Length: 96
Image (cartoon, rainbow, N blue to C red; front, side, top):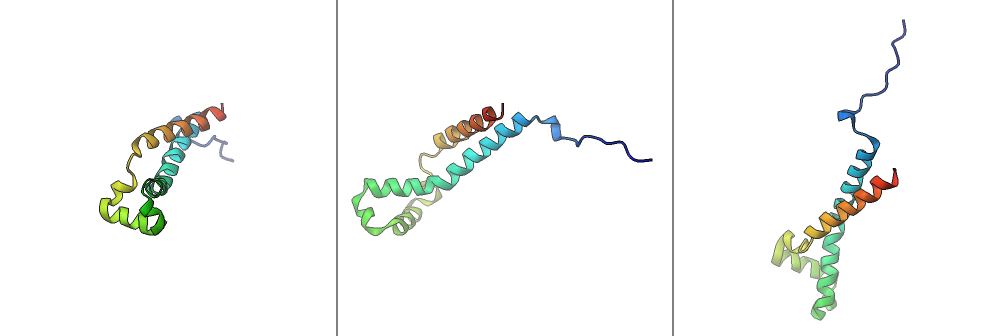
């Protein structure tokens, strides 16, 4: 006898909307994690003219040497929260 066809099991019975919201949240946080250091370096170069002459690599290296990883992510907490929620809502409501 052939086995009865069963629908695939879904972990914790997550709906498609939950998956969309979670995917958006991950996307928002990941895009901020990748882009924030570049934005911090750009802002540092705009705010301090002496940095504009040295270039992006030297400015980034100097910032990292002086302030570490925290210096590259200065002011990122609101962006992580806002970007995560914005993309979460964008992905979640797009599918509904």
